[in-house]
Length: 287
Image 1 (cartoon, one colour):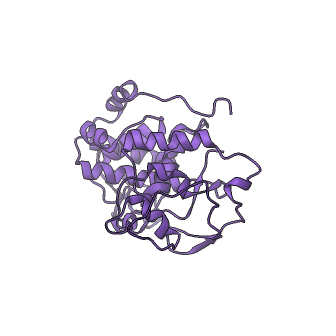
Image 2 (spheres, helix red, strand yellow; image 1 turned 60 degrees about the vertical axis):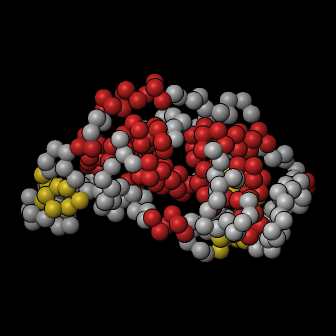
Image 3 (cartoon, helix red, strand yellow; image 1 turned 120 degrees about the vertical axis):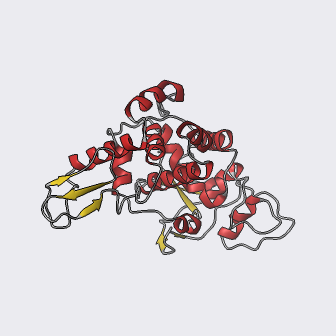
């Protein structure tokens, strides 16, 4: 597939420009307000658009009813205190820059935990942008990238054992790595993030596919996850695959597309992240 991979942009090439545009949290708030105002979303609860706002502020006040409104309310950025960190992550991912949560924490002077949470939530937003017709693949095809434990990992077993429990299989203490050459699971349903079931169209065994699987893309995704994330738990595998495709798939994207997606996305709580589990069939929006 010619030109299937987008050109990788280096962090050092774009970070000075971001620092010039968004040097502080106040500047980040100004940029977000400008985007929302351009979309016509700065409206008071009384339906008035005649508002006033202090530079760098997180609220605006209606000149009609005098009510104050948090303009990041009901968005992914609701109640966040690290606006510059969020804008940095959005800017870098939008521009196809490979970065780790540790780098984000160091550059924006936020905690590593906060940077990891931003990184994971952004991948969840990107995952929500995946088309329903994206290719469905067995999650076990990516087992080489699974080397971190999660709440779903069986006790005293290698993290890859989580793949068996996800499929409802019985796990034994002497569990060996899965053999991806075997037939794929016969189950034709998967659990979505909200716990409901979504029917998957009949998916044949890997050996019976008429078209070859995107082996190069799968291998590249595994290599990227292992090199930049030092592996991943199966629990969040889908998020990292969606993030990989968003990062490298050679498709044109509108300016501020990711920021607009974040501002249109409802808040994601810590409990939402804990409850998320990658389904048996993952969406791999590469082909």
